[in-house]
Length: 615
Image (cartoon, rainbow, N blue to C red; front, side, top):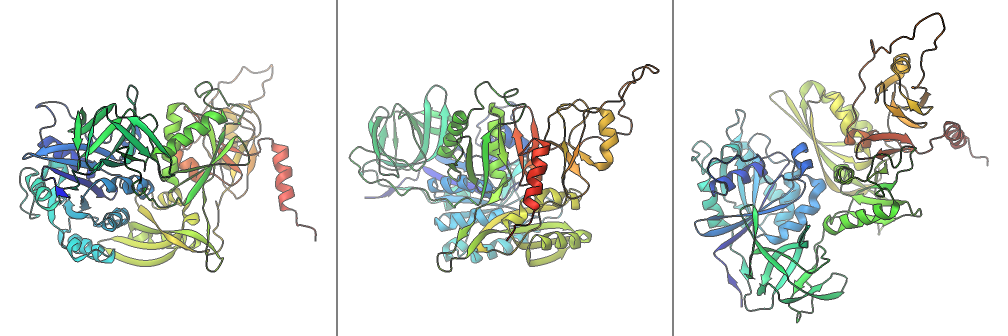
C-alpha cells in the first residue's frame, strides 16, 4: 500500500551554466534562517570545491535541505555543463520535481535543453523560474515563449507543458508571480514549491530499499552513500544487504545514518521512506548499488548514463624531470591505475580501460572539460603523469556497417561583424549551419559539427572573437563520417638541448614564433617551448648564451625587446596538443613535449613516415 508524505518535498535545481542556480540556493538558505544573524556568508556556498570556485561552475551535485512552514525541502544543486551530465542523470533519480532556471536575457540555452530532456524523461514536475528579470535587456515574454516551445519540442506531456511559473532575482533573494511585481523575499518561490512539487509516494509497510546515487568520503566514517529511501524504514545498527548490478550480494551493518538539514548532516536513529538520506559503515559502496533488507533478493534498476564520446591516454610520467615535483611514490603505474579506478566509482560517466602497455590507461569521458577537471583534480592531489591528445570515440552502425562519429550541436553568440569569420572557421571544421538570426547587433548561430572538429576549436574561437564571443556545445548524436577535418595550422618550437632558457637565446629566436616559457625556465630536449609561425615543427636552442672574450666584461642578461611568454592554462595545453605530443602534468608544472624526445630519432621517424610505400 502506497501513501504520500506531505511533510517532505524533494527537488533538483537545473539550468544552463551561469544562469544562477547556486546563487538562488544561497537566497533560499538565507531566507530559511540557515545562517546566524550578522554572520559572514561566502557567495555560492554550495560550490565548496576549489575548482568550482575558480571556474564559476558547479561540477559535483550537492545536497542540502531547508524547512519552510513545517515542510522539509530537500534541494539538490546540479551541474549545468553537459560534460558533467553523469552527475545530473544520477541525482534526478532522487527527486520528484525540478526548478528549471532560465536567464531572462539569454533564454533557454544548450545545456538547458540537455537537463530538461532528462527531467522530462523521468516524468518530473517542472517549475520554471525566469531569473535575473532586473537586467536592463531582459526579454521576459520572449523567454517564456521560447521555454514553452522547448517543452513542446522535447515531447513534454500536456501536464508538464502546463508548468507553474515564478519570476526571480536570485542575487537579491526576491521572487514574484509577475516580473514587474517582485516581493521582498523568496516567499512566492517557496509557496509554489509546496503547492506544485508532488510529495514523495512511499510504501511504508514494505521492506526498505534504496538506490545509491551519490558517494562521499569521510576520513573518520569511511565511504558514505547517498540516496532516497523508496520504501520501509532503516534503523542505525540494522543488518542490510548490498545488491550490486553485477548480481553479487554482500551483507553488512549500518553504523551511521544521516538526513540532511541546512548545510549539515544530522545523525538519526531511524529514517522513513521518502527522505534523502546518507549512510555509512558498509565498507565499499558503489553507485547503482541497492541497499535493502536482507530478505530482498532483487536489485533496483541500475542508473543508466549516456556513453562517453572522447578519450585520452593517461600514462606514467616519462620525461627527464619525472619524480621531481609530485608526491614521492605517486607517479607509479599501480598508484595511477588505482586512482583512476577509484574515480569511476563516483564519476559514472567515466570509463577506464587497460591498454597493451602496463604504464598507460585509456580514460573516456563526456568531453574535453570532463577530462580536464579530472586531470586538474589529480594534479592538485599530488599526482604526476602524462596525457595524450583527446580523440573521439567512433561507433559502427549495426545495420550498414558504416563508421559513425559523435556530433555536437553548437550555439554561438558573437558581434555581427565577426559572423563571417566564424562561418569560415566552422565551415573548415565540417560544421553545418542549421539556424542563424541577428538581434540588436548580436548574431546567434546554431551548428551541427563533428566532435573531432571541435577538439582544440575553443581557443581558436576565443582568439578570433578577441575573447568576446560565447560558444556552448551539447552532444547531438552519432552520424556518418563527414570527411577529413584539418588539424592544427602551426607547428611547435621544440627545445634541442637540456638546460636553463636564457633571454639571449629567446630574444634571438622570438621571430620564429610565440614562446610558452620565459628566461630561467628549465627545459629538456624534446620539450615544446612555443608555437611556430609556420606549419611543421622547428628545433631551437633556447639555452644558448652569449660568447665571452677577454676584451669585455660579462654582460648582464637583458630582457629588453623580449615579448612576454604566453601563459598556457590546462585547457590551452590540451587544445594545443598534436598527435605526436604529450602533456606532462605535475602539481607545479604543465609541460608540452614530443612523444619521442631525442631530436635525431624523431627526425628519422618523421622522414620514414613521409616516405612513399614501395609497391
